Image 1 (spheres, rainbow, N blue to C red):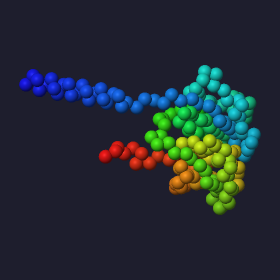
Image 2: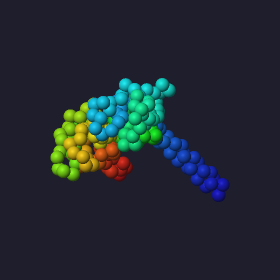
Image 3: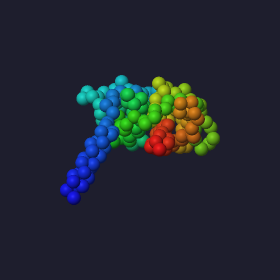
Image 4: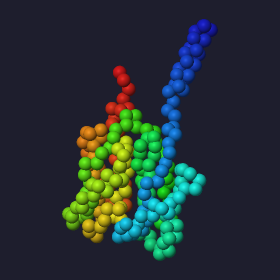
Length: 206
């Protein structure tokens, strides 16, 4: 009986060691700001405040949606802060939008994809309920440059323009390692999250 218990105990110990050896460890990644914008939808190129965003303590870094930080003393709750940054070695392009008094937490999150696939932009349009659509393919390609494995594109009027007064939408078609995927859409003031993960990537070999 004692011998049987010892055998079971030994088997449990070996199983625990094996489980620990397969523990997923966080990817040590480096964040780098790509673009930052602040202001109203009609601000256009003047919304670019990339040069005014600094992270003296390094990353992760909180960027406050605060007008005076960007030399803007005219308070307006319709203004938005958009920050786009990259994470390596995952090769991510991440983005976030924040209203006044809130903040963007610029940090690298998540593991590298189980099977990294390159994202390439086919085309992108920007427009509203009146049916007018603007071709913004090159602007989206600039954001998703370098063939990232994940790319978040902010649907912001000061980046893509104002073809009409209504709420606009961003529609993006893209490929994953050359294979077409369903288009992604995002309404104004949100973010289109382009990814290539598949359920089969997480399946275990039989």
